[in-house]
Image 1: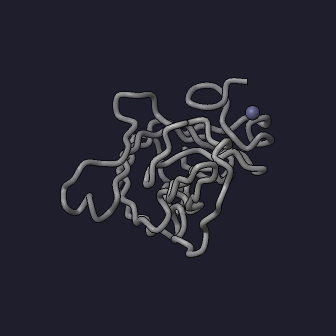
Image 2 (image 1 turned 45 degrees about the vertical axis):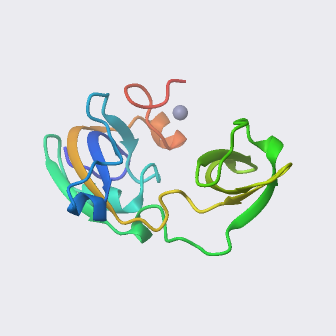
Length: 164
Ligand code: ZN
């Protein structure tokens, strides 16, 4: 069964910054030793560049792909600094350069701490992976039809997906 919209894909992946990969450095993250990740195709579950690279593939296939920042977590935008009250952060030990999770009206958002004051914190709202070209090594484990409920919810249920 080929990968296409409204099908569920379970896959293993290893992701690196492309520049680091070319130098033979350690990957950022890998599903090795864990359960494969499960996603529903065509619902924005993963970055567009990786989803495009999966199109038409089948279980058992392995491939590697470079994804430019614009097709990954986006390019870095200037002027995305915001000053927010310190109390918004649960982590009391904030330091410049560290990543933290900021609750927003649109859900939790990963930010980078720029400057820590007495009661306010300057944060960079760019995604920590913004502006980074990535390299993926992927192994497709399983491709199946999604249930009507999964398509309606826009995510996978069961193994590797939502348990609700
Ligand atoms: Zn659901």
